[in-house]
Image (cartoon, rainbow, N blue to C red; front, side, top):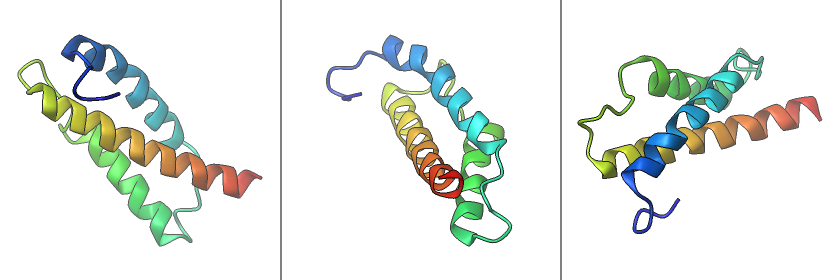
Length: 87
């Protein structure tokens, strides 16, 4: 998504899918017991999902954009870790 051309409605519509994808990755064994990088990413992912950081209708569009960016970045890194572990 590009902030300059994406509407708030587009961001709100993509939010559930991005959160679901991250949630799915957090339910996998990513080796976080042995790997401090994976452990940190899992903590960050859980924080994004579980600790009230999700945007609300009152969150400015830029805040929603940042949340989506952060959530997608953590998911992308966790997916890379999963792919490396599973081959």
